[in-house]
Image (cartoon, protein in one colour):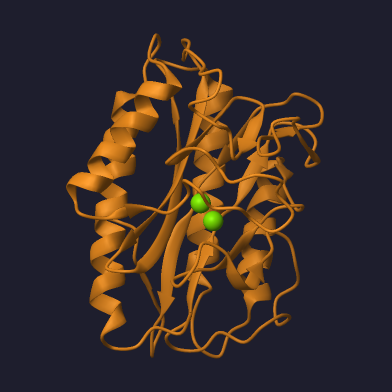
Amino acid sequence: MIATKKDIPILREGGRHLAEVLKTVGNAVRPGVSTDTLNTLAEKMIRDFGDVPSLIGYTPRGAARPYPATICISINDEVVHGIPNENPSIITEGDIVGLDCVLAHQGLLVDSALTVIAGKGDMGAKALLNATKEALMAGIKMAKPGGYIGDISSAIETVGVKRGYGIVFELGGHGVGNSVHEEPYVPNVGDAGTGALLTPGLVIAIEPMFTEGTPRVKLLKDGYTFVTKDGSRAAHFEHTILITENGHQILTEL
Ligand code: MG
Ligand code: MG
């Protein structure tokens, strides 16, 4: 989507709502809580804002059925798109819990994700989360008019390599705003100066995923949940951003 002047405050307000949802659900993640409960909390918050949960009923290209929940919850070796309300999981101490959600505010969509640790967690979990968040911010920093999608990809890849994590390259970011997934694709690995040109008004979701082992993922039989091929743990952070006249604006922060 190329946002107009009129779209920008709507996207920003929706982004603020989504940030509040993710913060509240993130704070509710603790040992003993069910993923189903977290999904219900996310849906209630979105509806209370007067917004629409965009993932329920959405069928991505290639999927055999619509996604059944408001929020994706992916635990430990689950990378993304875990289903919280079919055979719900009970969160346990030290779990790495990814929360990924899309909402529509006045018809415009924003997409964001974060990963939290249930309870205290171990040093490895904290380092994995920190590196993945660092990669997201490094990618965002490269987002400016006159730059290329590959500048973002390369910045993400550089952090992953430096920190020694598996960089999930089979999944990535995307355009967003009018629908859940739009052009251009935003890979998590790539070369600076390649790919689509970044122009003012472009709205994209940037979403690095790092793992403690292999970068390869596989899809579970539920048709949605991606897990690491080697069972290693993964983290995921995502913001929707706007390319502005002189840089970028993060839409999905408080
Ligand atoms: Mg997302
Ligand atoms: Mg996304």
